[in-house]
Length: 120
Image (tube, helix red, strand yellow):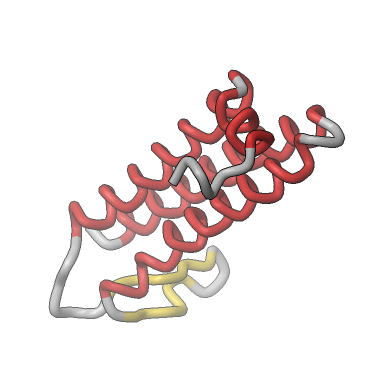
């Protein structure tokens, strides 16, 4: 594995600010999966979307709830890859991308916790 990573990418993942943003983002995405596993699987349909005007407007299977943390995890990985390439030229943009990833992970955990609350 060490041979596959270039020295610049290894330096990117050793950077303090990078670790300070990517590790909490990954932990929050895994926490979202843990919240879903806490209430799943069920036989009946689950609420997948709630609207303040119409109420519950989308029902689905239990595994469809996992798409939210999966999308968050894919975006965290994508932001880490893009950040590693941008880090060589401009570190500030890479750090902003990392902080945006943490904010995205907070949005994922809030959306997941609201779905768990609706399905209790």
